[in-house]
Length: 278
Image (cartoon, rainbow, N blue to C red; front, side, top):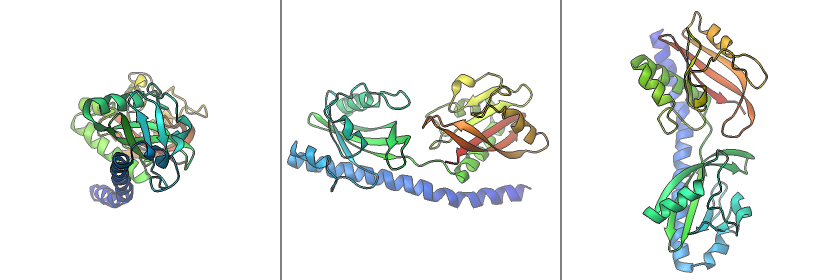
């Protein structure tokens, strides 16, 4: 049994590489485009703003440059934010309610450059997704280039479930704190960990909905009105692992999708990680 688990984990590792590699490539591409845009702006001045807003050398399939004034006016954009040109976006919030432009402006003013994570429309698939933007202040302007983070895959979800199970086995209390940390190591792309006490059926952790902590899990219904937690608990009654599917609202996109979740039973707790199928 142990050999099979080790073999499964080993086989899952290569499947993660394309996703991780793609993310690194996108990040490197975003940083390179920003560096090129900064150099171009320093050379051309405000004439560069029109260039950044056109389909051309500073727009690729997934990357584009946008520019803010120091007080938050959108001055240029080669992407979906072009609809915001000439508008004050300083206090505009993303799909999750985060005032990311304000964070960007404040950080640029204090440090000259940085990065920020936010939720933004990906016009390639029409979905709101996690995005990281690198930015740099040049004079009174802030130039930025962002890239979208990849969706969590089945292999990632299963590997995260295994890692979460090991963490609970080592120190359950610390593991639950880590699972609830939105900036911690147990949130990957749109994946997160939840944990439920098998005896009392209450949430010990939930990486996306912390308001559920301490609440009864069995009465929770999915988007179709089904009480799906009892089914999860039943699957682990005589087994240490399991899988299930249910309709769940993606906290990133706000849309209901089918979710495939990997379950682990560890020291009296149900630990789960799911990924969206669409």
